[in-house]
Image (cartoon, rainbow, N blue to C red; front, side, top):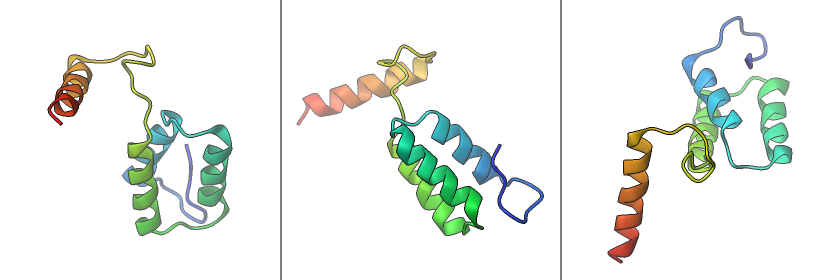
Amino acid sequence: MIYLSNKEEINPQMEQFEHLLSASSIGELECEEIRKEISDRDISEERLTKLIEYLKMNQLDPITQGQNYSATDIQKRLDLIDNDDRK
């Protein structure tokens, strides 16, 4: 887990951040830069929220990556494909 400097507890956003970072499609160098930013100094809630949104937009697709996936993941993917076909 990642801890905010000078803080004893991790807030729920930090747990979400760690999960999203571990499943992101961004390169290892960028992951390390983000980890360094978080561990080197206190990070504002606003910055953490922006990083979480960025990581949400850069997640691996569980279906095409051969990871475990649910029926909901499949439905979301089909909806995405269906919406693209309508354009």
